[in-house]
Length: 478
Image 1 (cartoon, rainbow, N blue to C red):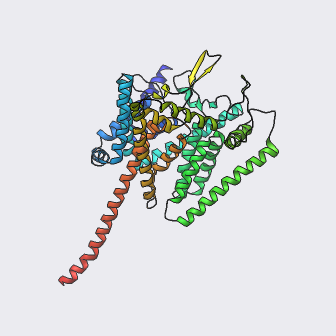
Image 2: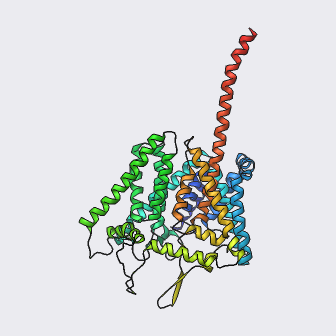
Image 3: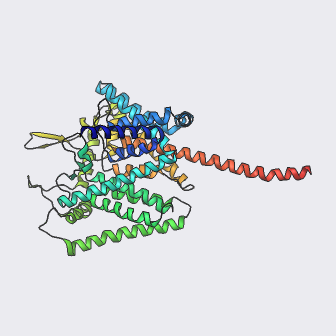
């Protein structure tokens, strides 16, 4: 048995070395899957498996490829958007160093952020990198659909604190890992958006796109994530208003909204008249109905009371809770001194203002999440950091939307970033994750792609002009 393990380890090491040297972007697909899916493994040393793989691949595509090195120095390090996000990460680094009085963790996060930005920039410029990036996202979405389906099959519904256990996480070196149900919905939504883009731009046909859209759409539905649903709707709108066929696009937008509205109303009618079972509390349909209809209705004063099984008090819906939570956090942060408000509280600074929830008669407590990504950026980087981040994000999104009108990109990163941005308005720190920095680098890569396309067009036009001029010169000489 030991011999088999040694042989397997030797073959794995050999394959890894081969891919690392000859096909590094294949390993990039694995890395991006780990980043998107939030899968990791503990390894000896200061970095985990994901961080180690990121640093190794970064070294490979930079140190062993002079073209990439020249591109980074000649374009990325001269790009205004890079320096904006660099300044944003510097604020986090300096504030964290001053407040935490420790050097190791803030510097590690800063280096990984810069590496993620640079690596995202390089991957998007390579054709193999684009393919592996896209496939990694779609695989992460499909695995998330499987996770949700397996959970519903085993338990009947998402209950308790709305968490589920993913089978792949059992490989990780921890006792128990649970994931909030919204996150698999996000991954399903991200993959859905990219598949729809490929279909909309006629890069993929119906045979491939329709089954994928059906599976990934069911993942969004099973997750009951309103944040994902809203983000996907906005991104589909963005995709349809970019392109040369504007009339055709607006027809698609109208059909999409009508279809979503009919589906939404139809499910309500079918559920209330045929599927509702009062005595069943954990049925999948009851869960979906409450999350997609009852909780949103609470904003307008209409709600079905749900009671806590321990205290017997009525439970507050998550939408109302998020609104109240954001107001509480903003009030507490604006009570801080001027320096804190301007530059924030650094890494993990949110815990200084966050609310604690006590359980078991006050014996244990845990910190409530912010449930608002922009609030977390404000608290950790201050008004200065928030302004830089919002200016950078909206500038890139607007600029790339204009470019997407003229060119059909193979990997339009802006849509993925916009989806993540909208999603985090009701979530937590995803905008400061390594994935977010990777996407920002990818968007800068899309800008560089545009400049390369313009140069190619100019060269083509110039060569055509020369071919037209030369015959005239010959005729003149004759």
